[in-house]
Structure formats: C-alpha cells, structure tokens
Length: 536
Image (tube, rainbow, N blue to C red):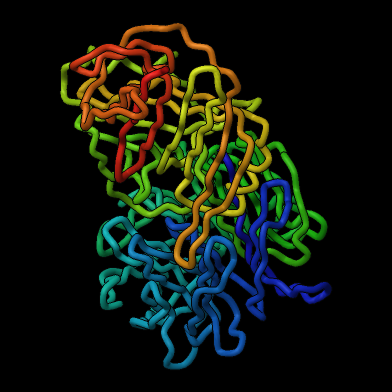
C-alpha cells in the first residue's frame, strides 16, 4: 500500500524554483512542485489523480488544476481568497471563499475550469464537502445565526441551513456518509465549551447529535479514518494541538504538533499526517495509537494536505476504465469492465489462494478468465494494474514476458524501477458463480521498465525473463480452436489460452495429437489467444 501526500503552503521564495504546491512521499521526498504565486489554503484530488488547489489571489487566479505529474491544466478565479475546495465525481470543482462585496462565498467550475455559478450565504466560507446525493455542504462564519448551508449543485440555490454550536464560526467538515458529518469550529458555549460536533446534515435543517469540549480551544481541521474514529487539530492549548476521538466523541489520545495545526489527512491504513507551522517539522506522521512515525520540513507553513492511498481493488468493486485485471469470457473474446477513472499507482498486498490456475477443461459452468499482475517484494505481493500480456515460451529457451500497466505516474514508475531484478508474477483463473479463483500462471525476473507515452495517455511496459524453464510433461486438450495450419511442416493452432499448457506437453487439437514446442500468448482487453506450434 503506497501513500502520496499533496500539500499546499505559504510561498517559498528562499530558493528556486519558487513553490506553493508539492507532492511528497511520506518520508518527505519531493516528487514535484508548482508555484501558484501566493499562499495555498486548500487542496484536493479527483479519482483520476488530478490535483486542485485554492488560495490567495495571484494575478487574478485563485484556483488551479494540475495533472498527477504537476502539469498545470487550467486556472480560474473565485474573486476572493479560497479557503476550501472539493471536486465531485464528474470533475466539477467547488470552492469556499472568504467572500467580499457582491461576490459569492461559494463558486462552482466545470471540469475544464469554466465558471458555472457563485452563491452567497452571508458569511465567509471555511469548509466544503460534496454529499453522496450531490448536494454541496458549506460551513462558514455565522450570518443571521446560521453557519452551515446546503446548496443545490446544479444551480447553487440554497436547499437548507442550520445553526451548529450556538452560531460560532465553523472551520472544517468531513462527511462520514450520506447522513453524518463531523464539523470543527471556534470554541463556543453550547451546553459546554465545544469545538467538535457530530452533525446529521441529511435534513433541510442540519442538527448536532453531540458536541465535544475536550479541546478547550478552536479547532481548524478534521478527518475520519476507516474505523470511524475522528481526528481534529487546531489552536495550541496546554501543549496539545491534535486529538483523536472514537465515533461517540470519547477522546483516545492527544499530541502536540508544536504550533498551530491547519490541516490533517488520514491514510487508508489509518496513518495520520498533521500539518502546521512548527518550524523543522511542519508535516508530522502519527501511527493510529498516537506515536510519531516521522516528520519533515517543506520549507514554509503548511496550510493544506490531501493524503492519497493506493486503492485496493477487487473484481467486483467499481473497476477501472483500464482493468486492474484483464477479464476474458470463455469464448476467448475480451470484455472491458466499466467504472470510475483512477489514474494513480495502485497497490494491494495480497496472497493467492491456489498454487496453479484452475483447469478450464474441468469447468462446465459459464465463466470468464481473469489475469492479474503482481510485483514480488521482500514484504509481500503488490498488485499492479494490468491491460495486456505478451509472452513466448519455447522448449529449452528463455521465457520472455511483457506486461503493460495502463497508466503512468512518477511514483509507480519509480516503484517498478526500484524493483528491477525482483520477480513479477501473472496469476490466471476464472470468475463464475463461485467467485474468483486464481493461481500462478507465469513468473519471471523483471529486467526492464519502459514508459510508453502519448499526449493524452501513458503506460508502463515491464519486460521480464525466465531462463531455461523446466516443466513436467502432461497431456492437454486445446479449447476454443480458431484455426489450424502448418508452419514448415509443423502443426500450428490458434486457440483460447490454457494457462496450464507448457512447452513439451502433448496436445490434442480436436483432430490430432502432437508435442507443443512453442507457445505465444496475446492477452488484452481487445483479444485473448495463444498460438501453439509443434516441436520438431
């Protein structure tokens, strides 16, 4: 599981290049940087790995979109300092703004940066989130005793509003689900001096289910982990800036960042990254139990962070426009699963259930073949996206294997390059009414990592080799025979892929039996077949 940090901060001008936005590894190694020209207050990422930032106006620009490699894609203007930013599943961008004069406190932009609308609810906005039903939830400074507003995403009109914590300024929001949000704000008295609330926002009048007075001062940021625990950070009080709570509001631990905490992010492994203005350790990583893992210094006060954890995908989850696994019906024709765009490096530590692929000749139900790619490391097997396989196997000769990863990111390229000399493995199997069953099909030493690039896409091609493979001879019947022919007097058959077939096996092509000497595989989302040639 890989973690990627994207941070926004005050502009660094002490060294070139000037920068306000950076991608880091958890260890503090910079992957890329960009310069907005003024302080960045907010940052988020979409499912394709594009980065969105918002901050103080610079040259009439408050909002920017970058590719996952740091290339600027577009710039836009919210006409006021941006304090929070969110993106929906269609790539539309929403900003919460300080607001001034007739300008709105929330702005919406299309996925290409075109302004769509601005809304004004009276108080400067400080937090924004997109509900599962598409509504825009904004928390803001109190105006007419209201400090949370719900907006229709299409038109920007108000669909609800409420008063949380007695009308104090609200500074941050994170949604747990389609009903519950956790909100932080300025310390206010509401049956106790509270600054963290659990809020039911599903109705037209959001209401607090409980509030916590544990921090005793204003909180500026909030996050939630996969177990429903809450993390909040803010003003320093009694040498405490960061607290963890259970879902019922019970404090589990607290820590001192050393200065104000402006932002935090939670990885899917429940590691917490806290950001602020403590010189020398402005980004600090905590274990789920509150112990410090590491810290690093970006060079200026960090105001925003988004943590991206490589997603664990399974066959039945919403899959990629490129498949994480190559899936092929039993007819030999390929299908491509539909799904959401995710263009980040993907990793999943896993293990296989079977030592060998299932025998297709013994399966009589309707099934589809599935192929998965794994990088074998000293700490486990990392699953990588896979779009195509080519391999040629011959008796007494090297097995050459190429596997295409249908996306390029610097982190994924570095990860693959760092494992040249390690092994990769292709697992093959079936998906049917009994679920997915896979076993190892091919294993080879990674020898080359190459990037294939075009203006609108990129991929990584892995090349690997096995020297002098040895196989115990067996007899196999070829399935899905497409054609039969002869090559220099040798039988040649094009048919469906049989992962259990090896060079030197005896094959029956439906007409004759002979010894397989050469097997060439072509497996992708467009075709899946093998060509078997007789041994002389």
